[in-house]
Amino acid sequence: MDLRRLFRKSPAPNEWPIRHTIKVMPRETLRTIAEREYGDQHQWEIIFERNKWRFDGEDPQAIYPGMDLDIPEPAA
Image (cartoon, rainbow, N blue to C red; front, side, top):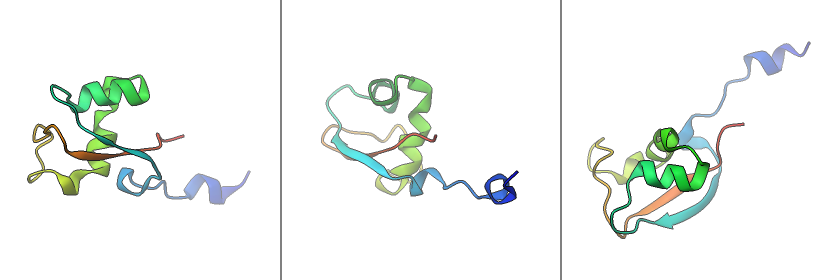
């Protein structure tokens, strides 16, 4: 057994490689974007964590049309 693999620190969501960047469209939410990108609306926090610096404070509801969001590769 490779002990290094067991104790290797997983990168935080804000360190995951970026798959691509999108522009938020009207009426989109982090949940609808997560559903489209990952097939699971509950993965919205991955997108939020990667883009936290873009939000007003730490409010995930502060999403607006025209906002750029980096979409990270999902965790393996």
